[in-house]
Length: 180
Image (cartoon, rainbow, N blue to C red; front, top):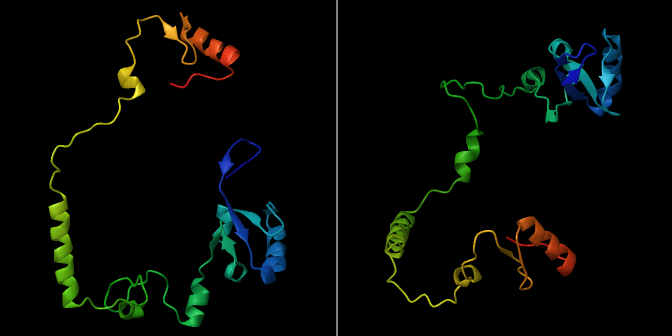
């Protein structure tokens, strides 16, 4: 999107024509009113209104906003169906027809293996018996109760009356902050 002199924003489409079509594209771009400007050494900013009426042959092989341009003219010339076009059966062809050959058929032993794996997972899901948790208490668990309005320094035994004072003390005296 690019702002105009009146402050309104109008959409711009960045077109990077194929290297061999850069000069013909530039000739077309400078013939437009207002002229289409360049945004880099190989890309142009085309207003959306002009993009729809551009000559198709200038877009073949181009990058449009970073994506390759898919030309219906080029597809028709090469005999390719348009992307997402319905096949004679009425369904859209979203993948090449030969992909079914790439997927091997599942042997019957694999089905049993899946069932066995499911049984193993179910057995592992049973709760474990309660155990002895003999880990040492964490510093937070064994810390004594601190009265309200007292802010002890974690680096020494000094107690301060505000958190700000404690933080400043830790920075000035100990050269470090307070981890909370």
